[in-house]
Length: 64
Image: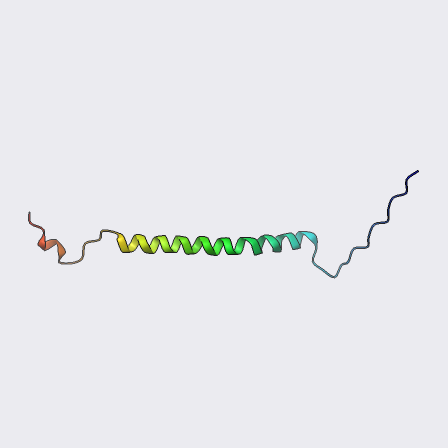
């Protein structure tokens, strides 16, 4: 007959496993979210600088 091994006592001083996993997910996702925001911001900036918006007075030089 096998005797079950005693279970280690749980230490209630630290965060639970679910909370620890959520914290790790947050720590992993935060740099990704910041990088994504920077890339989107940079693409929007580049698009705004290169868009073909006529400057006031520049249309007068175009001959009909």
